[in-house]
Image (cartoon, rainbow, N blue to C red):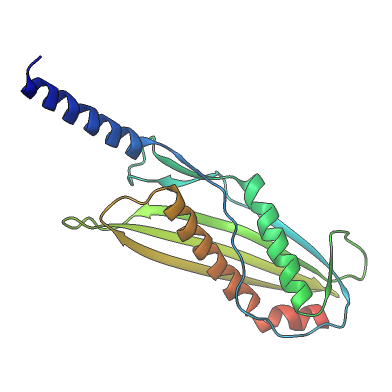
Length: 196
């Protein structure tokens, strides 16, 4: 085998490896965390806290932007719901209430639901591509026959020259959901109704 064949074989192998890397699915384990402070409303009252994932599918998009791509990005509801539960309980505790999992008559309740989590390819430009991310959270508070429901949306557009790897996608989605949590628990109506 001459040198030219070795170079061609090496180049073909490199291209195959790169394409295989681009086609690999990403299973992301997220750990979003609220970072903003919340106002004090409670005096230790019990609040039933729950979290839910209302998405129809764990797949949030593809790395290539093509619906037929095998490079899917998956965020499991079973892994994300406990993280949302933890952050909801922490927010309720920081508001001055005592979070509990037990529903009881007379206790106010707060439910955080993930309605949407999306990852789409944005505009194609020379050398630069975009990823468009969107998260929608709903928080429902019920107390003494009164219900308040708030919807909180977080969006992010990320430009890149090299397609984001698993760690980068994990970080971007953690930031996205953390921002939605910050928006939700910055809403003073939640605490006011819980304290009523």
